Image (cartoon, rainbow, N blue to C red; front, side, top):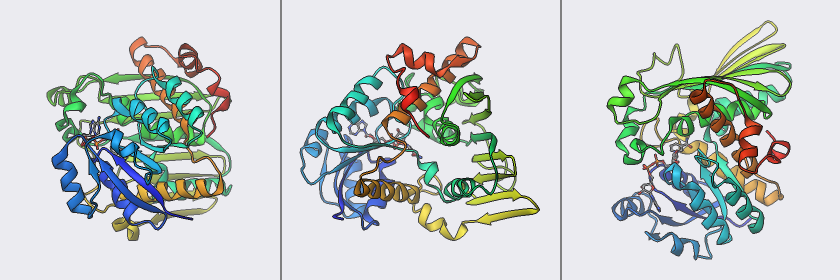
Length: 363
Ligand SMILES: NC(=O)c1ccc[n+]([C@@H]2O[C@H](COP(=O)([O-])OP(=O)(O)OC[C@H]3O[C@@H](n4cnc5c(N)ncnc54)[C@H](O)[C@@H]3O)[C@@H](O)[C@H]2O)c1
């Protein structure tokens, strides 16, 4: 296949997809765009790319760009997705896909009228231990899923240096919890109800955070299975030998497994076997710059998956529908922390005229 032309919007985390595109035979990095001209010039020098603009419309008008990678602040995603689709481009959008449902119908309508693909860049699904866990589970070696526990807890006080992280629009519920919430829906797509609590810690408040930074939730699927999602963002973490900033545990009828993040570790039990696998040899592929805060290898995995789906005429997942239902789940979580009651995902979707998505969205 001919390499897909990539335009990158937002050059903070967008750095990772630039690196991914440059190292992939399936992609050609065509153009970079950011309203911050100084940063744009830095990225051009860093990656040897010459086509930079501060004008999104100019990048959208470039016929060599097939796909827009969106890495702008969360609250701008919906507008940027719609503009890309209306310009006839496919979209890969960083998580959280959108940060509220007000514009969900407009995003869905834009995708439908364009006929273009929209994939949510749920990076953790594309990290070695989590890919291995999924493939292992799908092999049947662990039996049937009983419950899943996913969490993402990391000391993200550094993130509060970004002015948009201190605005009322920014919520760790979307920025952080979108990872474990997506992991749960990957295995249990039909989560129907959620209950949880949230708290803004003294550390988060001191950093200028307006919304909570500490969350614990219990989720229920249509068939009665339950799951747990947690996230804590302004506290130190215990050593990685004992815990992982991002982890996903599957407890199944014939085995159990745990995928861990920065340690590139996967542990499982099935029958008499107890195994710990390491993907340490892949560290340089995944973490190319910026310590663990950028993880370009996951981006390379998901853009190559996206390109192969396009070649085969398949829909890359998570797609626009699955993305919107996950946002509805996060909104139900948010409302539960405010109301102190369990909230149903279908009620949230219905309020925005999106009830039909529950039947359509897959895992
Ligand atoms: N694991 C992941 O997938 C992952 C990791 C980190 C961040 N992210 C997501 O990436 C997005 C960006 O986060 P970040 O940490 O890079 O933030 P950031 O603030 O460092 O970068 C955002 C960039 O967007 C630019 N920008 C803002 N408005 C713009 C506009 N209208 N047009 C063009 N450029 C504009 C800013 O100048 C800035 O350079 C967020 O949605 C975040 O959740 C995803």
